[in-house]
Length: 274
Image 1 (cartoon, helix red, strand yellow):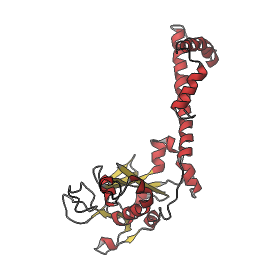
Image 2 (spheres, helix red, strand yellow):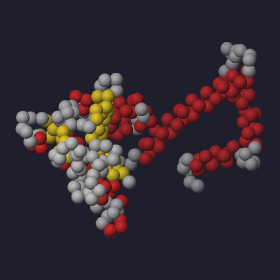
Image 3 (cartoon, rainbow, N blue to C red):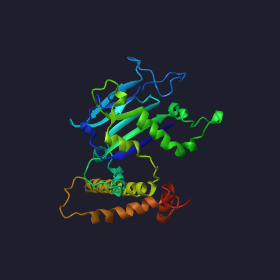
Image 4 (cartoon, one colour):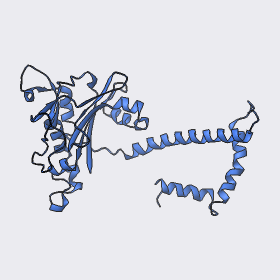
């Protein structure tokens, strides 16, 4: 129902001229007859192109991103500081660091992401997904990514260098945006699955250790009841008292052994074949 395409690059967009430096086609709710394709009607002006970002995002004053279009738009875009996003909101996505380093990242500079989001209305214009009329299929998408990216980064949205020319479409494309425009030429296929799985597994293990340790601390506090905990108490004492309780719990699991229960979990999480 929706496709997101993105490219990451080392360029600090926080200093961009967000009010004049971006030009794009109108990107609000399209007409139901779709007669304008990607050129969607704007409530305040009939111009084919708009200037500037719709929204500017900040975190403690520094600019962290821009939005172009809305969630209801057939096509929209966001430009945001991916490094800051990983640091503050999604640390489990640090597997991107490996990909960036493999492509020349110095390990310190902030990486920004340029992302285009296309809904069904836009995809149909690229002859994708309209199975009923035999025009195209969803699995045709990989072969058309380059064309879609070219449209998005060349015709839909551009980051330009403002000049005195009143015709903004003639403004020169910024060198950083030229790199964005060529991000999918040629398209490089990268299998992220193993990297993502391993990093998520590491993060999940860390969270489980935190949860289990916290539960054991709580369990020991309840076992001590109103008696102050001795400074000499340690985790091994808690585990020693916990072990028989765990065995009693396992005996109630319909005669399934610890090993069989672990095997079930491995199948549930697709760690082994069913």
